[in-house]
Image (cartoon, rainbow, N blue to C red; front, side):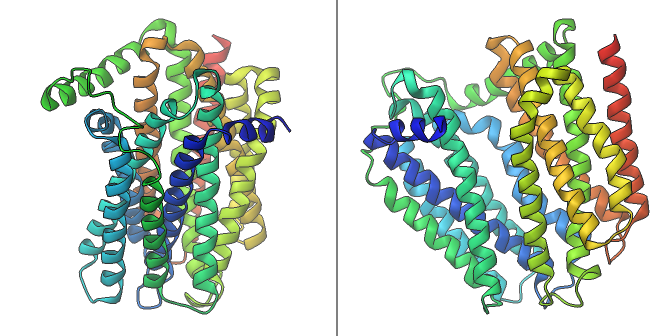
Length: 421
């Protein structure tokens, strides 16, 4: 396979191998920590999980990516990136250990969430630094390939880390604190792996003059605003419509994710230890299979129907199948829906990425994708908040399924009208 050949070539670069090891261990730890956080909030025997608690957990996991992300580069251009990996991972290990202590202690929920929020906020700097450091460890000819394979490998590591967390918790240990400590150990391993890289190898170039921090932050904010204005121009209408459609579809996916969490916790199990967590793991795996299916099907679908037409097809499929499968609130139909929604949501995202890349000027592309990242994550958190208001304790909400179906229908109608014009 071409991917295997490309990876084999990249692994010949010693420093790429070392940087990749830092990424795999770091994102593997992220997967462990995030599953431990979700398990504690939703499946801990001593807690009566609510949709509001789930929404809070999602905000902790996702909002730092949206709020900190656009400004992370301002500091990364001032700090040695190797040191960011070293001290950032050590700091996350310390904070994760604190989270484990809080899980075992009788403390207010806000203190637990504050600890988790700090862990995920630091994560934004580490991930951005990993991307910024790639040009320092591979040549220009292979940079595009490295940018494709390295994040993909990191996502796989996060998935495997989540699987490890499920295994540790289901293997007889009901301690979410122990799972968190496993993640803390992996953060320490990632920090130690970074020591194999020279301190100045990954940059930034200290010979280049840097603007003052305040001016840089203000410039970043102005850059995001100019990106939004650029997106509003008549030549970028297709990109704007695609981003709006993707934001609404991400909202739908987030709302249904919270519903499935509540179904696993209450409707499909008699207690937190009665198979609910295993069902959640199965739902995540099935949805992930849908993401993989989207990667396989979208190139052909977007080529045949066009990116906008493929977004319509994905949203249309979700409009029909969400009520048909979701309103049963039964395990098998809902798991099938998880696969379908994983496929349609990711398929629409790939098409949206293509539209943005092809219709936005290169000088604005980075800023538009920063705005895209904010919309993507805020939509998911907003959906969790709406679901918290609509869902009953057992997760069976006809109103939520109907609302999501209507939103999907709005996407289909609006995008079809735009494509005709």
